[in-house]
Amino acid sequence: MSNEELAYDFSPMIKVYKDGRVERLNDTDRVPPSTDPKTGVQSKDVVISQEPAISARLYIPKSTTTSAPQTKLPLLIYFHGGGFCVRSSSSAKYHSYLNALVSEANVVAVSVDYRLVPEHPLPAAYDDSWAALKWVASHSDGNGSEDWLNRFADFQRVFFAGNSAGANITHNMAVKLGCEGLVGVKLIGIVLEHPYFWGTEPVGEELTTPAAAREYMAGVWRFACPSTSGSDDPLINPAKDQKLGKLGCEKVLVCVAEKDVLKDRGWHYSETLKKSGWNGAVEVIEAAGEGHSFHLGDPTCDNAVAMKKKIVAFLN
Image (cartoon, rainbow, N blue to C red; front, side, top):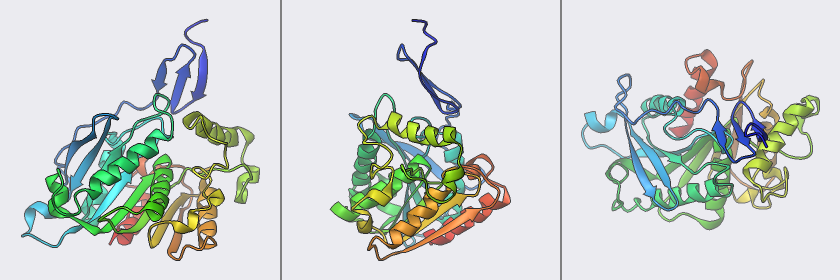
């Protein structure tokens, strides 16, 4: 067997070879925490757990260091995207995105670094994310291990957000919180940026989606979650989730992009949520002419600026 034989090829994200080698494509742009020269946002990395290895990058806006002791700030917990298999909380695009968002929304943020597929198949990322949420919640009495959360975060104004696979995690964490509770935390809302949901039956314009694109979306899920029942697993298809109506927040913002193959899933999610018995408010915004995760690749384009404004308003 040549060592170039592929077991999985999910370009442009990841290739896995039959000899077990994993090649993450376009995933080398890691940056250290910093004080951002443009926004004055400070960040630092913290270890949440050694075994399993879970960490997070924390962000505080300039206002925490420049004004007198003030009222505490909303707390945003963010889950990065990358098909569950690439990227991290230190990826340059996510770091720069959160610097801007934290600055404009004037919030404290925790960007979770969960373990990746295929070394750690799902549900590892969900388990890690829930462990991170419990760690964050351990600061709600002001006596946690991390000073920034004790001093600056308002645990009665908590938001979850994420992009792509991270939006999938965001949704699933909000359902888990709604079912199990999270002591000391009041989840106000969630933001789903281009959420990675899927399903066996096409919705919306998916009937015209090329078969290869549909198979890619279904294939990434099977690769990430080998124990899955398939594309109608409630973890990837919320419309099949009996617990959807228990979503543990009062408002939801779904961001979709016109040219994203996942667009119709975002719309379908909002329609299903309205019928689920959940009594919150859900809104969908669609960016015309844009593709998946465009706001990370081109954060200063008009549509990305408009999307960020909408998210800032949602967090306030």
